[in-house]
Length: 114
Image (tube, rainbow, N blue to C red):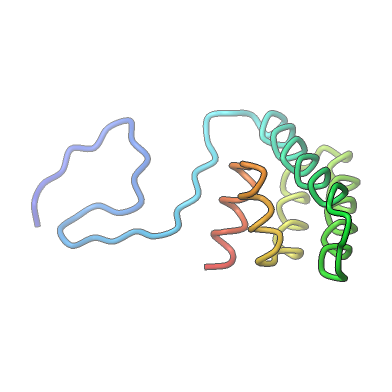
């Protein structure tokens, strides 16, 4: 194996033939800042759902789930919010997260789905 000198980096794997997939890095900000960004992203997804005139049962369920997650976020506990997102993860949730350009929520859901 070769020798590596890695400094100040976000690395998922190191070494010859090393592989790393679906990494999610949420670093460099406080929990409060992360929670604020997650809430903003959830608001964007909620707005998209509300603007969809013909929502089927899956859309309605996701809308209720997002409203529940937002209610939990009022407690200010990032871990609770992430746990709730994890429990409500679906392909639709991921697709809409991507559709509104979310970063944290989409990355987190992707890491769970894969």
